[in-house]
Image 1 (tube, one colour):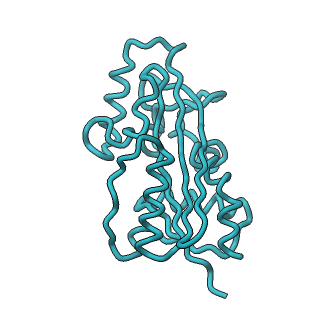
Image 2: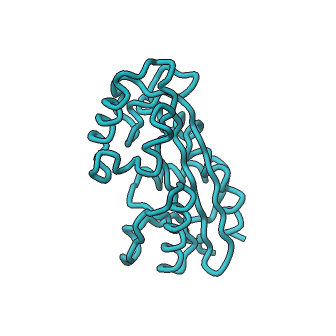
Length: 203
């Protein structure tokens, strides 16, 4: 019997690998992950939701409707306490250019320049949505608390990982191994919460 195809609404190979590791770790078999690069292009609605959950659900609905495949999508970002929860849903375009990790991180560090260490708390948030065409919808949320470092550390990861130091660790998220990050990260936590819904795909 052929594996069930699951569309991952992302062109980020690291996100597909992350979900694959979570599925493997949970012993979920029979699911073939397909990225956006592997399906015909379709118009993707702009991320206009005011919450991570709204954006993730919109992405998953678009993907499912366009391809007829069950679709999982995530919307994630960084909420910084001293910035009243910003950049939040604007995390990927905080500097004004979507996806410019270096510029986004530099701007964030500049904005926190005068903020003392005790007030540099932050949390990565990930909302993951699963939409099955003509069927169920599920949305879950994972959070990963920590503090914002004073300078970037480490070469792994992406986004704000180099300036995020998880609670209970002295290393940044960009200094953790992929396995360590999966076990602790916001997206890893959200995907793990989504496992029961994903298991229903394989009947």
